[in-house]
Length: 340
Image (cartoon, rainbow, N blue to C red; front, side, top):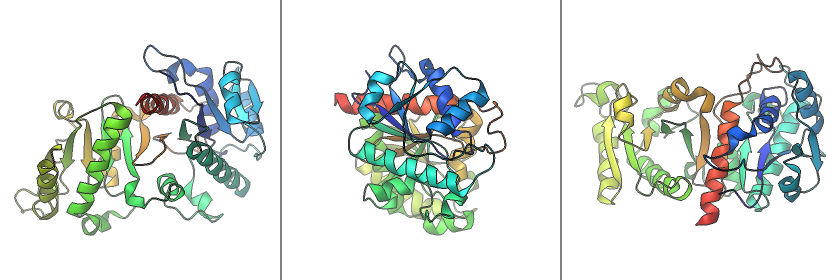
């Protein structure tokens, strides 16, 4: 199955690796295809000159095909990388700038509108530099929260999931100081996000009855209160509530055991208490194929699970694997929604 509309790609920061891995994803588009299927057509919102320069620097055979409407990407995709013109900036790999940040934000904004309007089947976002965007007035903690705002949803309804071939993890708290995590955790938060995860896994991934593992917060999951009471006071009541509602949930599982190969076979997604508890195992196991998926939105959004990598931008070193995986996953999710 392939989506009925093309996938929209936002450029990301043009000084990062986004432009070159997007172009490489078109060159290696067979890697974006689901098993036994065709590559989903995609287009880039803005940055035609940035992309041409990145393509030349990387030595790729990737024609840039200007388009004026997303629907044109369906026909242009076989000839080259479809790019909507009108937004651009100088290409200066490794040297972020105000002009580059403005291009990144404009590309993200328009790509989001195309997807919300249904002329794009899904959104794949290139890596941004939050600090650079903050200089031009971007006040969301990240792209996930930006999309929640765009969809008129509270932040907690947009759930970040990191997904790779052998692991899916969900951080229940995200961009905050580690010292703030215990106070932010509540049973209601765990229950709310678990419901969203289970629903999204059924809707967009075909996992009808998702098995959810819930991590502990403290070493040894608190060891009966010896190392903290959050497990007994917050996490265990949430698990009991979810189980009473019919969800297949277990835990709390100590963080040092949750990601062993044998335990990973027992769940479809792991709910983690904080950012690094979820991202470290995913990046250790699936760095070149890790995808950041936003669950709970009316649109499909994926992104490669890495940053701008300014230090290697323009040097031909960036691996496009995660971008290819993000496009492939977006196409698969879109096809499932279209078939529902």
